[in-house]
Amino acid sequence: MALLIPLAPFIMVVLIVWMNNQKKLAEKQLDATASSSAEKAAQYASRVQQLEDRVQVLERIVTDRGYDVATQIEALRDTRETEDRDAGVPLNLARKEKA
View 1: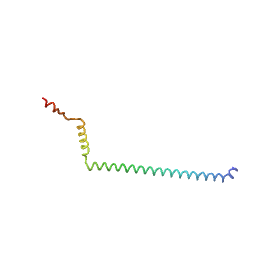
View 2: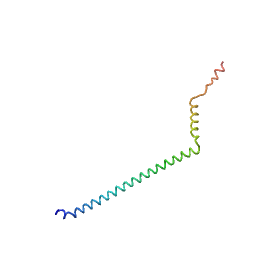
View 3: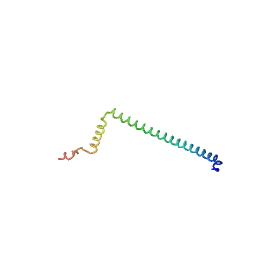
View 4: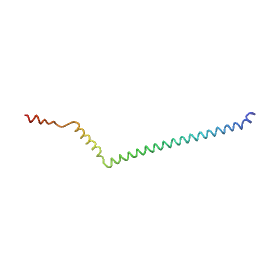
């Protein structure tokens, strides 16, 4: 106990320095977390804006053209299938003329 009395001021200084360092470390961690959170929030806001723009485009397509878009797409598919199949009947006019 007699040794602690002369060492008390030194122990207090060490504790004060340690507490100040802990405080600075906590502030740095808080700043890092805040900047990281702000960056993520900006990314999320950007992504939300992109999604809202896409929804607006889809709404405009549905409301401006109505629900006829699906039938137009199917009509295009039907036309392509007919062209691709070579569905016509070949005319052999040369053979008929000989007969």
